[in-house]
Length: 487
Image (cartoon, rainbow, N blue to C red; front, side, top):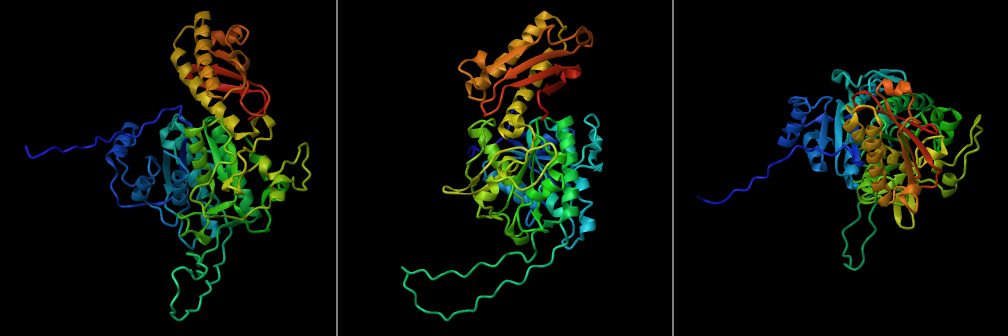
């Protein structure tokens, strides 16, 4: 015997469905020539994807930035910059769906405008995918088979719909100075660093914002109808038609009202990071940044906690910087039947603070006060995941009082744990929530059809009123949900 050899037995990357920190990135990137790690090969085989060496339209579990950088040629891609920022901010796991190859560098807008359909195929605002037919899972439709995902990001969307940009002017060449002796205690001023890219960052005009908002409706439809535990985190495209924030323009044209929902969280402005140097103007779409912060928040503090004032790590600059007055003052827009809210109350803003660059607001685009705080929707997602597990355990039980009582006990156990960690408000569990499942929540038709209906009321630990949630256990353990106030 010459010695001992220790080999690490790599495991397939499997996570619990209750995790609330996992993201799914869908976008365009080239495959590198690196072989698949054994653990990823094993996971793909177990999930029925075979051995897709090109990794075309299959979800790839990624637990380290180095794994993504080895599998894909990510330099100068918005998808690569977003995934890097996700891990830099504290994310621990994501899935990457390579929807297609990136468009050619000098592709016209008409050509690029066809690429979003690869992110989620469909017509207009409707998507073309079935949760029961795996062959229709393209792009974001892979969420049907990823029960542990909590966030969806499509970082290439804004660039695909942007106007054809003119090249930037060449960088100013700093004249060379003669060599002189300099005392080591005195540092000479450094000349300004030139941009690494001569291309202008993607900006949208009216037609671009129109296409962008319609595609967000398509994504929102997917989430609100089928994958209610997932939240879309999308960046607002940079404006090319005006200098101020695009928020007022989105309100005036009705774009924001079109897709407003608790399932959609907008983020602005764009960012410069060590991973965005090869992108146009060195700017990256910021959804990877915010999603990484939300993942870190879920792991360290609980996903139901508001992420406001959390630090942005590894960020050099934000563009454009917004004045405080612009953030907190409603724009002069008149909306029919609605109140105009300040930017901070409708968009998750990133910006400077006395402590550095931070998240200034953590909100959804929902028109309802109940669902405006993003932490409330994330809390409901956690509850819905737990309720689905409970429903699957009783799906084959007879619909009788004993089964109803067992369902109540299991739901109460979930809510007690949430109350104990501070997700629910109340001096005791009785004040924090109430669960009912009996003949007062179900009709005879429900019982005859095999439907179990449980009503759950709880006080979220946020500045909102009491929530009233109705959970229905149908065939195959499926859970449907209704709430007071549309999410």
